[in-house]
Image 1 (cartoon, helix red, strand yellow):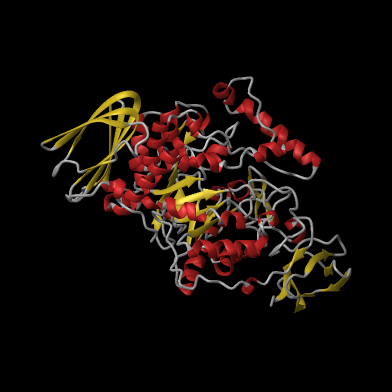
Image 2 (cartoon, one colour):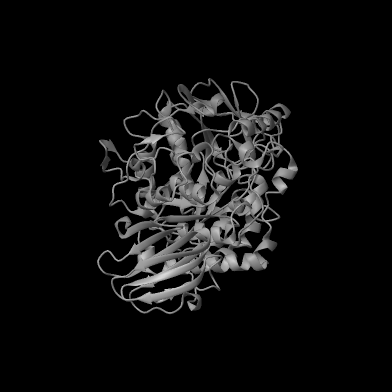
Length: 619
């Protein structure tokens, strides 16, 4: 049964409950703190709205369900009605976990959470640990990325609504998969955003790229902060979510004595202790600041930590992408050299206090050498790095299979937490474009014009040519063309790429030198046409050498070993491009000749069986 309704409206002199089914209204009772309440709960599945001072009916700011869209009435939802089957689920820590980001609307032809369940076995077979869902909060229209949500406590109805999310999480847990939900608290979308009518949810004290900032430190901020924290705890408690990805936390402007992120981290830690399983927070941050993942009880550079479990590290992506593609436009201007990739793989932030040409200012701070590398999430593709390109094109547009193999090896064999983007595991060629479905004609036209204008301002003409037309975000065809083509996974090239990803993930699971986040046990050497990433062997233990051949044609690399000669080589049945043309072992060293670009993995130490014969089992 649902609880009595409550709504925070401190500026209103009257609040009425509106029941569309009967057309009736009834006044709410106000408490001293600006909260209004009904005297009795409404049955589950009841549509309702609130009228402020005789104004039009508005959806509940904490609406659990918006079946008629973001402008329609809210609907009560009994979160306790689902018969969960995951009582034995132990949870999954995100540190070091192989994470798979997907967009529900384009992951399957049906574009729903229930349809996505049918593909979970593919992720288990791949070796994924955590499924990360792009934002599900209710937004205007049928399809979109979800970063313009306005019904922040609800689940977008075309995806199946809140009950479908519970079914998805339950099904994932049954397969040993954790679920991470992407949430956006730094701004709201333009369509259906009624929060300002209810109270001081926004402030002019700060500004963001999307306008007035969410009010975290002005009058009324305590309730706004509670709105965000209560919502996070609800996803964990009522939907059994395992982790939240926090979008663009650098845009959470907060001059309070205690930052919202620290308050949120401590609240989540307390809930994790209560439910007895790990609950994680992963931040997207452009600040390049280790303070983000510093515990709340510790200090980094005279400032208290935010306590976030892990944060995205875009510099690794930029260094890898610019090196392999040769792109130097926009924020890639400071990237592209093999030495820059080496710095990213060992120090994480390329901009760690030095000059950022793109930003035209010094940027970032160095990562302490003893900070666990798994605190940083890295990728070769994600929704931003693909979707914010003018044509939404993936690296497969310009890279050979060998180049894609290099990307996969860097992400999956480095000392980080790896993130994959849907379809990359088979070398998907389908684009992931920016698409929207704003119902207001003037808003849709503004988005279309803005996207077209970006083409001239971001150096895309230099990359694509001046005769390329940017797809209209509002066109249905833009959304449809972004759907994954699962038939590609069954092609010869798709199967070989899948074999590579499975093999690399198995290696990550079975080799302690790879699974470790100890960055002190990671070294990188740059040679002519190659980068050698070495993991492990700090105290004479096992060691893995990842030879990344970057150039076309044969590349020879000498790999030195202190103990035995290599016993493990990814053979040509797994490696795409970069097939070893020769492996010559001698005392203390091995010379590998590679037909690049591509990757070869060698292991020294105890005897191992061939990687290709090692079965994968989901823990």
